[in-house]
Image 1 (cartoon, rainbow, N blue to C red):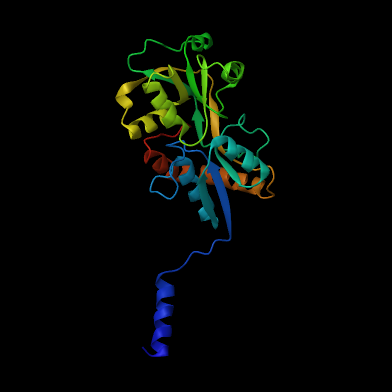
Image 2 (cartoon, rainbow, N blue to C red):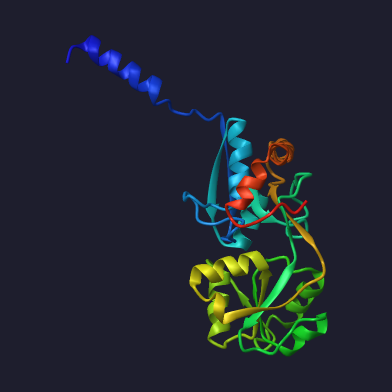
Length: 257
């Protein structure tokens, strides 16, 4: 092929197959918590990841999303290794930079085996079961205090660490190694459907306190305030244009406002 023809071909290729050049990259981390954040680089990365991409990429910022165990995610983001923590509440990391707009709301829910008679009606009810929890999660202060007081008593509390902690807690529940689990209801049902065990568990009650879910930014990064403001403005815009409702609907969720 003549050099001139080759040059023209390259120019045409570049015109019709442009490469995005990102001005900067924001790295967001968490453990897996679907449908809020799921498997990276798939068609369903989770609601919070989809919202982050919609907002930041519109502003020329690439989103890098990674899964790591929750306590490590909190500590490494606090140290500045990563920019943002997905799915944080204000009691998870009070020293972080939070947007003014939350990305969902969270009420803790208790689930048991289908044949279990146990029901959560008040705080004292948990004293009669072995409860499966996940290390570092925000379960409201009264439950966190109970976990701390009984963390070395497996007949009352069993704390899960590492990867896929909810899946492993569900398996412990079904294998009669614990009596109940606690988490966000949408998350429990999503994971249970993926495991094909929805018909083996049931809701045993909700907590009464509402917490809000955010993407929170590292106190060590100079750009954290800017990212928080950008994300807040972006969420307002997504809601106004109806794009937020579209993102939520992909995961069977509705706007909380």
